Image 1 (cartoon, one colour):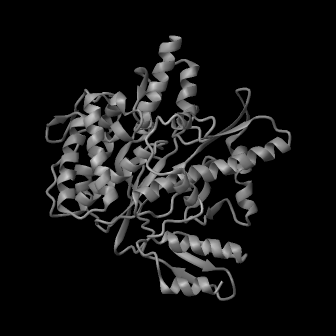
Image 2: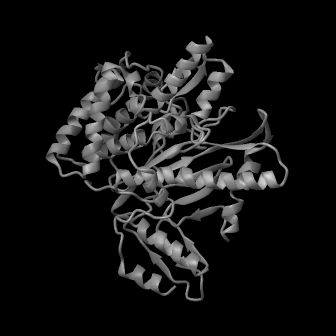
Image 3: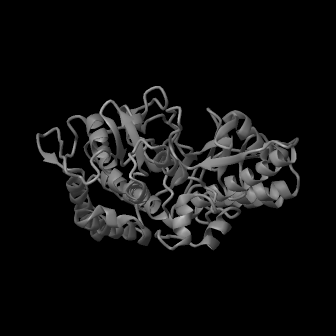
Length: 452
């Protein structure tokens, strides 16, 4: 599959504090945040005019699922649009609380863990060919996902029985299997629950659970772009793959996460030993050869080129990737603070930086303070992000969903929408099924839209 549909589902953390003390529970805060959504005449589970889905997930986590994208630039814009949409709801909820005399501030965090040790995810979805043989995923995809932390990790201060240390990934300690149908009981790297949201005879949806929530546009672009190329290599049976199957994948996952400078090798099933960087370099070289031999889209070609540039710089000095990689940017902030104030990793100020880096408030969040100083790499403009809050990708099925939601809202029509169905809740109960996520136009849809 040289053209691919992909998307992100991001769960956000929320809290409400006054002078450092929690005043409302996450459930109470989230209900204030979603009060405006419910006021639109819908539930707390809605599809938006930009083709995305917004809902309140288990554990009182606001969750935003991007529309289907076939462009990495659209995906980054859609992901950042989710931040903007949710932050707008937070600002509205803050006004409600202020009006009711409830003192304190709402914080919305795009991270993956809270102070109680709960973990919530950033899940990646990739449309793949229908193939029940997962062998090539074990050989290539799983080793790639375990070692990509070196550029895709969001960074976190972790305390384990080995003490307190800085880790590349927020999710590494929370994953327990490689491939499984479970999601929460025993979190896998890849979830195999068969929900394609498309023609089940042609497509499968690969659900990747291991990923961190990235603030960096560059990291989002790179992690999804490189994964998409790796999947194309896995699907292409004419491509002979080297077997990178790891001897102990869960141990390797945690080992890589604590090895900031990729100095310790992990063992493969065949007895070979490679560091995370060496494995990524080997994979990147094969991806470069694959791209040269295939007609992949320009954005995927860009992703492979950036992959090589990041790995080259990582080998020289990973700490110079502070503009591109979240874990490096946060690590620099923490180390600057520790050097200035002579404090340990367990100091509360360190924990504060660890958290505030992910604050989505553009005036308060540490990532956005770096962005305001032009210290982060951008992949899309603010205008594209703003447009993406109301405009779906125009080259996928999301175009039709977004247009339907917009027109139905304008005409005040009662409707039901999911990833595949568009339904008018009238006497005729007109329903349109869109099984092809790659198809952005359909005569049946135009007739349904014109009838509103």
